[in-house]
Length: 342
Image 1 (cartoon, one colour):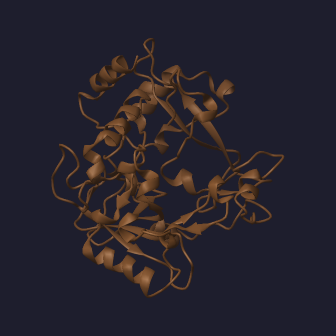
Image 2 (cartoon, one colour):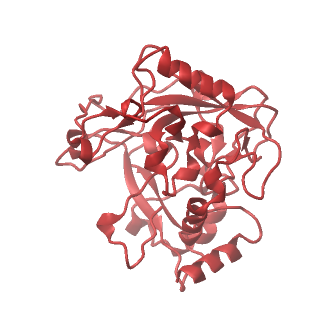
């Protein structure tokens, strides 16, 4: 979500897509998805607007097909070349569909983001005709409720012990996240269960190379380095950033003013034998969960969820019109935030 102020220039802005949109592979010749923006930022004339971004289908896509966007433009693949990553992709984006059994086992049973209320009440009324914007949306694809930050909901009934979702967890240095509004979304080493800490320690010490805090950037001339090899670094500096799905947006047991018992837990694993800058996160139900119920993770709220970065994150969610806590006071909270911002 992008919120502009007079002091910030467009070229200084960075956008991060949270959820499945973050892990679409790139296909430079036949992407079946196209990035788009719809809605608009709230302002005094339309304080109840919502600014959202996402992807639209460029062609008919069968259930189970892989989704492809394109990281560059039609003329180049700079995103890969700068990072020294070989670009690999199938000849066609029309990949083989997955079986129904595979989809039932691995497709996410959680939803976070906009639902029909935000779409129908705060985006659709201000959209130009579909002939102008170039896309349409079938409202039946959206759940009947919004699922904002800390309000991830079950799409279907879930039985205790059943997998809810799988996600990639990127291993990052807490120092890189510190002070950013992404910090409250990450899971720090200190927030993990003792068994999960032991698992990470085993991956680092006994299976050398399977656990890295990988970093590359202009300061390393885009060469990859392992921050855990840097002097003075240790596992306590580690943070796991859920790079796909809804885990990072799921409420934690002690989230501010929410409390309550958890109904799911997060398991951490890693594929044996591969060097990795990430881990696999699995969200599993710890009791029966009904469709539409809010998911509550068995992790303590991060210390950052009581601090300034957490408040900044909530403010940005509010002033860009994203669903937050779906209660009767949400619109009033947004109006207050908008008045403070403007």
